[in-house]
Every structure is written in C-alpha cells, then in structure tokens.
Length: 155
Image 1 (spheres, rainbow, N blue to C red):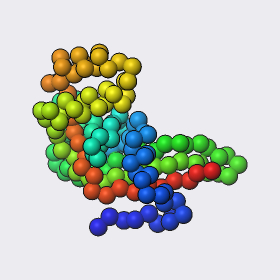
Image 2 (cartoon, rainbow, N blue to C red):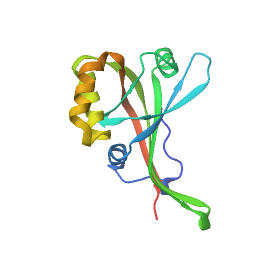
Image 3 (cartoon, rainbow, N blue to C red):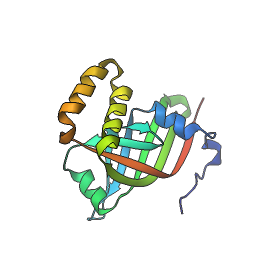
Image 4 (cartoon, rainbow, N blue to C red):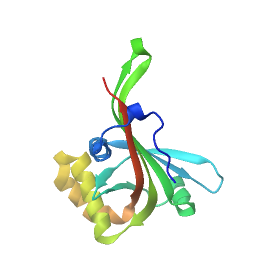
C-alpha cells in the first residue's frame, strides 16, 4: 500500500526514523481538504510514545481538512548542508504516513507537557502553569504512524 524509497542508496539504517523524529523540532504536515487541494503546514511537534503530537488553534484550515480526511503525511528533515560544488545537499529526513486524531483529557495534558519539555526545557514551570490555565484554548492532535521511511545523503 505504501511506496518504498526508490533510490535505495539513500535509505538510512534501522532506527533512523525514531532518531530523526526525536532530533527534529519542526515538521511539515500535509493534509487534503474537500476541494481536493493538498495543504502543507509547518509546525512544531513532539515525538512521544511512538506517535507525533502537535497543538493548534480551536479552528482552522488543517482541522477542517483532517475532519474531512484524517489521512496525513508528515515530513521532518535535519542536518542539512548545501554542497554547492557538488550541486547537492546533505540531509536526513523522515516521511510519515498515518491518521490524525484529536486527543483529550490526560493524553492531551501529557502531550502538551511533552511539547514544553521538548521545545522549552528552560521554562518548564511557566509552561506547566500555562497549560493548567489555558489548556481549553488549544487543541492537540496525534498522528498514529502507519508507515515511515528514513532517507538521506550524508558526507
């Protein structure tokens, strides 16, 4: 059902998917809406308990698209460096396919805390206070990973 990487020389070793998802700070979420157009949205995320979590506003384009079709793709890339003399670039990347769903209750709070620990480690007490006071002002979604590939070009 899912395509494999065509250029087998760029396939990264086993364990690279998790390593790259843990190393990345931003990713690009791809959704598709009722109009048939794909939409990509850059966002911060956390890889936690084998899934990808992100938070967003209470309403919006990506939420409308996910309500229409929960199948999504998510891309993360790290360690990029231009190689001008070789007309190329070094990189490591992951492409994930899965279904997005909203989470609530304790899972929502855990995911928000994981985001704070991952993205704002020097501000954990303030982040916990913010979550406790304003958790109802954000939605948290989880991508349940169905397929993932890691590829790259390293020096």
